[in-house]
Image: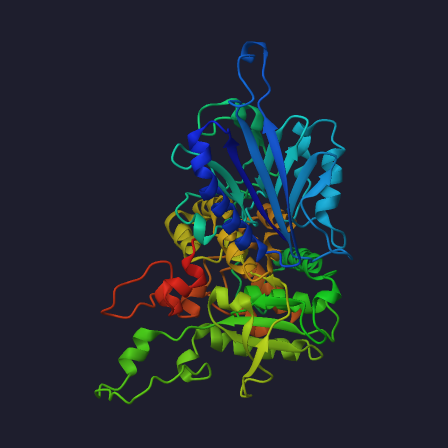
Length: 560
C-alpha cells in the first residue's frame, strides 16, 4: 500500500497572486505530505516536474518573465506488504512518473510491474483497457511526459481513497491526495468518482488564464460491474425448513461460494512478508464483531496461513455514557471524590458485538484447535485498526495488554449488499415481490462505489495498515451477481435464516454452526457507538463525543 499526494499550482514571477500564494501552498503541501506519510511509514519520496508554456507563432510577444507554467509535485509513501525488497515511489521510467496504491500480484511489487505494462502500451489512451484487467483495489496517478498529461483514477468499487481538489479563484491549487490533513480542512476535497479515468492536460492549464480546471478529459473505465441476474424463481420454489436440510438447488451454489471466498481470502493473506511481523505476532487481523461475515473470513484466513501463526481478532465496544449516567448514584459528589478510570472488563462493556465476539472466537478455537486466536478488546473503528487493546485466551480469562503487529486487516464489508442482508431487502420483497428485491439488489451493487470505502481506508491507513475486503474481490462480486436471487436470499424465511441464506449454508458446511445463525447488527448498534451523546450536553460533530475526547486531540475530528 502507498499514500499519494499530487499538488500543482501556476508559477509566474510577475503574478502577484502566485507570489502571495506561495507560503499558503507550501504549508498545504507539507501538511498533506505529513498526513500521507502515516499511510506508508517504510519509505517516502517526491518528484517535481515543471511544465512550461510553449509559445506559438502568435505568442512570440510573451516574455519568459510573464510566461505561465505549472509546478507539479508527486509524493508517495510506502507500506511494504509484498515483494522481497523495499520499494520507493514514485516509480520512474525515463521522464514518466507513476504512483500506485493497489493490489495486482501476490508476491511482487505491483507498482513496478504496472508501470512496465503502462510503458509497453502502444498509446497511453489504452490505459483503460489495461486497468480493466486489474481485479484488486487501486488508486493511481501517472504523469506522461511526452504529452504532459496527468492520468488518475480509483478502482470501480472505490476500495482505495483518492481525494481531489480542483482549483478555484479563491483556492487556486490542484490537489490529489489519499488523505486530507489538518491544514487542508478548509479546502473542499471530494472523493474521486470511480466511473472514469481522468486525464488532466497540463499544457492547456498552463496556457489558461482561468484558475478553474476546464481541461480534464474522462476516459471511460472498462472495469464495469456485473449486472444482477434478473431470473425470477419458479412459483413452486420450495421453502427451506431450516439450515440443516436445505433444498438440493443450493448444493452447487454453496460449494461455489466456498471456493470463490476461500480463493479471495487466500490471495489477500498469503505472501505478506514475514519480516514485517515480530516473531510470534500476527501478520493478519480481522475486524471482528462475531457476526457471520467476519467469522467466515477468519475461518478461511486460518485455512490459508501457517497453523503456528496467530490471527488477531479486533473487537469493537463502547461504554454508553447515557446508560452509565442513568445508572449512576444520585448522591451529591464530594470535592475529594476522584473519577474512576473505565474498566474494559466491566459488564457495561458487554455490548452485543462483545458478547457474540467472545462466543465466536470459542467456535473458531474448536474448529481450528491449533491456531492462536487473539481476541482484542479495542474501541471503535479507529481504535480497532490501531490494534492496541487487550486479549483473552479464554472467555473467563484475564484480559492482557496486547498490540497487534498485523498490517493487513480483513473486513467483511460487502456481504450484506451482495447477499441480501439488510432489512430494506425484506421490505422490498414485502412491497413488490421478487422483482422489487432484484431491483433493490441492483441498486446495492450500483451504490458500492459511493459507500464509505474510501473513508474507511483513510481511517485505517492512518495507522500504517491496509484494509482488504474479500467479499469485494471482483471475482466474488461477479459470481454472486450472476446467481439467481433465490439462491442468495429468501425473505420468506425468518431473520437469521433467510437473509444471506447462501452464506449461512456455506458457514454451516465448513463447521461454523453458531455463526451461521447469527442475526445482523450494524457496527454502530452492535458496539453501542450509536447516539452516544449525553443528555443535556451540546452535541458535538464528527464523533467527538463518541470518542470522549476533545476535537483538538481527536484523530477522527480531522475530515475523513
